[in-house]
Image: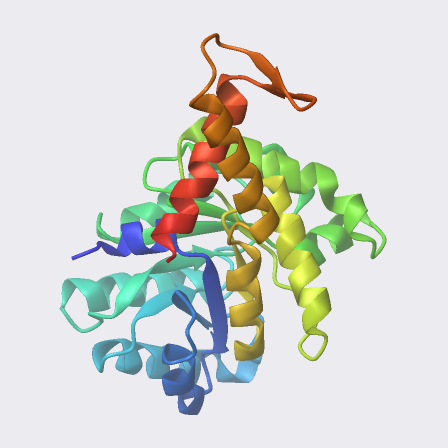
Length: 283
């Protein structure tokens, strides 16, 4: 059986569902998302925080499986939610909890505090949403027990005063990918597209994340899931390129060759191998 951390580390699509809407939990669970995230933070009004936590704990004990995004540890609710979730797991009353998402992640100390409350088999996703978080991303990623980083683009753009164009966030995306790779953890999870009806925009957003080296994306609506999942698969063009390179490799005697104007060396061949492996795994 795949562990909770393994499932989260290998997932591509993550669907948010409001924690105060238990009527939507079943739909989220059957949406096709790799992982469901019950959201106790942005999606829940302050007056509904306690009710959302209680309903989430009940659902996790009744068969719902997924991550829970708690409120910031600097808020009035985050530490209580963390304590309650940890206690429920220890009492075998939240069997469906796969782990937590820590929003507004800014430093190693904060993340280590959250990790200490969780049992070792549960996943921890650190959601980076600020300039300080980006600058500290390697330290956060190397904190023992961190499963993945995730990017909160809207909050980050607000924090640095960036415009709406995606290219203003290039540095942050690259930083999270590099930090994750350097820390030896799974590729980070990209920010969700705010578009629900415009699936072409959702596709472009997911393809952008994949191009940077992200391993998946957050989703805010079930309609986004299939589009995001498809965007992270190798395209037909990628597959044809990989087949061309691997066929050439079989004929190459030296370490580097020029074939039809393309330089083929070990890194190029390894990339082609990874594309072919991913395609086989998803067939």
